[in-house]
Length: 397
Image 1 (cartoon, rainbow, N blue to C red):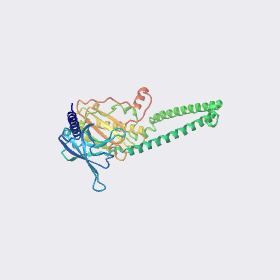
Image 2: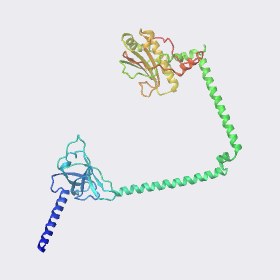
Image 3: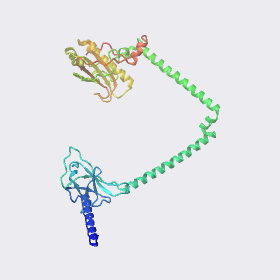
Image 4: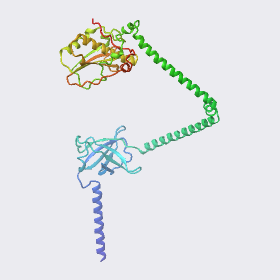
């Protein structure tokens, strides 16, 4: 081959490589394809340069066209990017641009998240939202702070270990109370005997309290003291659970009557009715309408003893039931009671509590009956007197 031929072949090959390079670089820079522009604003671009990659979902989809500095302090830096038309269906108005780093110390690139399906499409020249970039200097500072904290924790652990070793050495040497207990067998035996004696004393005290409670129950049925308990409206807790259910049903009642306990009872700690006629509207509804069953639910305020308030609400529900059954004609097996005790969310009046009558339609399942501790005790020992029941016949006004 002649020299001229070789020179011509070299020129042709060089031109082919040059053209290929131009097309490759131009394709990467989207010089020969249809594009559209978007903008994003940042306080700091942390080293992002013009010509940098723009990635959508991690895929190279555009380039940074230019980075425009603000005209005055307080404004943000504007990044203008060219994006391929293929991204127009996945970048939406709610997409977010962030500046990411390749690896730990790699180059910066611009990442754009996918938008939501319901969001509108972006238009050429729109500005999308952005998130501030993570600066490596801040990351290094946080890492340094964590290392300082870890070093301090290690030092504290070391000191604590040394203190434990010192305490252990003193105990082994018989110093202090713990050391004496470990090393002096006689002292340990004396302490064990003292502890055993204290335990026996506590058992005797507990037995004494039980006997006292039983005596109080018996005293309530004493002829001379019965009037003291009866003045509070109840005296025999064996009757409290007779018609009581353990919870309200899940069904919605067809009718509901609500009263303040202060409106119905003479004292805050009493189950003795003073204004029975307020219950007449509920009694007339029960007498004149068909229903599945009804529940008298009584709650107390947040003051006072929890167990006493529970017994009080049970007694109040029983007293109201007996009044309605006695004065209005309906099937009394369909009227149940529920003493709810303390309730935080109740229509109470200065801690008195509330009374509600829930009336349910036919077909509503009645929840199972509830047995109080007093009722169980009365079944176990029928001859044992128990307390807390309503006055069987409240007087109407």
